[in-house]
Length: 358
Ligand code: PMP
Image (tube, rainbow, N blue to C red; front, side):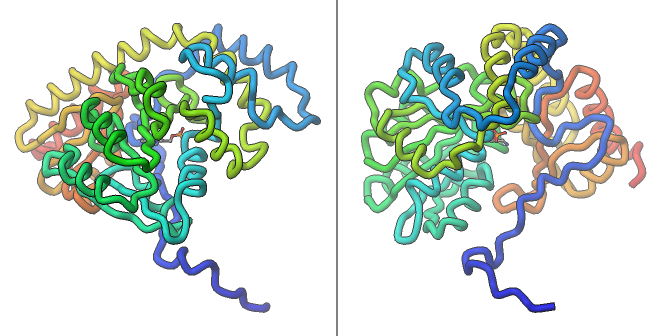
């Protein structure tokens, strides 16, 4: 067999993204919604999907869905763009604002996909690490932005995997300090209820990322969107895959978006459970949970890698960050149903109290 020539050099040293999904009784590793879409909405979805012409290409820009999102946000159609999950739009950002000779300002620890996208597109990464308690080092970021030479930044609010919000005042200062494109990643904003959307009218360099994967229980469908200035959105349109959002996903998302009020009680329940889980974690000796405005909680403890194994042995899958840069001895648990959260807290308590063998 003939050998194959080397791939593009920027791939050297990159690890393929691996979310480390494993079968488990309590699946608390991916920040999904523990509740699937309810029966009535599912019925409506089925009706809508039945009407889709599978032999035809979809509307490339999903204009019906775009119009719904635009109207709900007091924007025009051309200020909205949907993507194949928020992930696609993050990649589009790196394609459109990154590239050789260009620089992305990153604030680790944060969502690892940002840095991977920058490397894939030969974009230089300027890291301004967070403080020891995972707050953005605001002064350092503002100073670096004011220096110039930054092409885009991503402010994650709430941040994944650490959970805290970025300050509104800080983001405003940042938008004034730089002409770089500032993406505020609001993938979890439904759990914090805080958004930068009111600032879109004043700041051309602000773009907001949202997703249907979390609050709206559609991680399996792949649907995300951005809100921004029409000229900025147009640049994203230039680099996106024309048919990345298929007709079935468009149909599902339209129904879910039209019914979004029905997801409110579920979101409320997750917010309430979050407080209960954080409180439960605080009561376990040696466990330090970090504050969270999202649907997950990061916590730090001795021997976190071993504790992860013990939890998994009890059927509870959480996300292991214990060897990740800046996150030594940290684990992240998504907020699940009350039963899943109880199973998690019980298993963790037992692991710490030595009632659980490896
Ligand atoms: N941004 C952040 C901070 C995330 O955590 C995620 C999902 N893990 C995304 C964006 C992308 O979500 P999706 O592709 O499911 O829309």
